[in-house]
Amino acid sequence: MGIHPNVLKNIRHVTPYVPGEQPQRKVIKLNTNENPYPPAPGVRKVLEEFHTDALRLYPDPAAELLTEELARFYEVEKEQVFPGVGSDDVLSLCFLTFFNSEKPILFPDITYSFYKVWAELYRIPYRCPKLDKEFRMNRADYYQENGGIIFPNPNAPTAVYEELEFIEDILEHNRESVVIVDEAYVDFAGKSALELIERYDNLLVVQTFSKARSMAGMRIGYAIGNKELIRYLNDVKYSFNSYTLNQLSLICGAEAVRDRAYFEKNIRKIIQTREKAKGELANLGFAFPDAKANFIFATHPDYSAEELFLALKKADIYVRHWNSERIKEYLRITVGTEEEMRILFDFLKHYIK
Image (cartoon, rainbow, N blue to C red; front, side):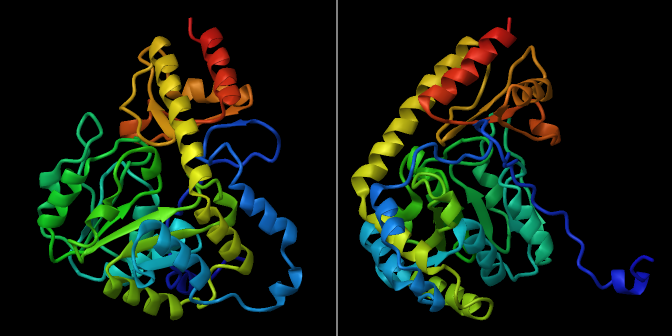
């Protein structure tokens, strides 16, 4: 016996976000943009010394320990920092908090697919200006009337990075809208839009511990911006879930932020591997936008992306593929360790003749 139609009509139906596969066995895993190296050594020490008795207590709802470390690292005031359970949690709360106009919000047609899911879940009207043939945003598309703007920089899944001049132009043309720059991958790219937050009170920058800080499993994200925007975000958070980050995440997160040297060393290592991988892919005949993230978005003129995806998967090498119209001939390849990339390229050299 099925659910009564009158019950069904009052249930919210959405098309959910589909995350990358998480195989439960050892494979070459280059499909979810995780950092291939461990977190800062201090994180391991925290885990070894953590007293489980602390888990019987609620965590600090204001996440002061982590907020203060982030404020110190980025040289902002702690009232300008909003932590959350991964950047997805932070971004979702941003949609709830800032996108409440009847005007459509704007984000690119090829971008992080969770944006469309949140917009539909929260019944926010949206419009998706098309990226050009080089997968770049056309700034003029964002001069139109809107209820807010969000985009990743570098973009996902394309790995294309826009310079700060581009972002500042968008901000100048949208003084009456909140503009959110999702910087999950900015540490592998160039300058952060954080440089602009003191000049633009409508700018919110969102970052994560999942990529450059090697802590995807801890689920830590944060937004930085004008104090008033952060206060409104906190109001929504406290109306939704007061205790977001757990005790262990707060302590480990703070420890990871303290170790700037390890953070910067890991980033350099991944960038070096990425640049080497670009050369290998080009030698094999692949084409790709200039990657400025910890992944490369590549296509081959002589091989179907789906064919390559399935052949790689059969060999226990996981990359990401979408059947979306404009990008169905592309693979998103996470930058792994030198050894993981060697295995990938050994396979491709034998497969592509």
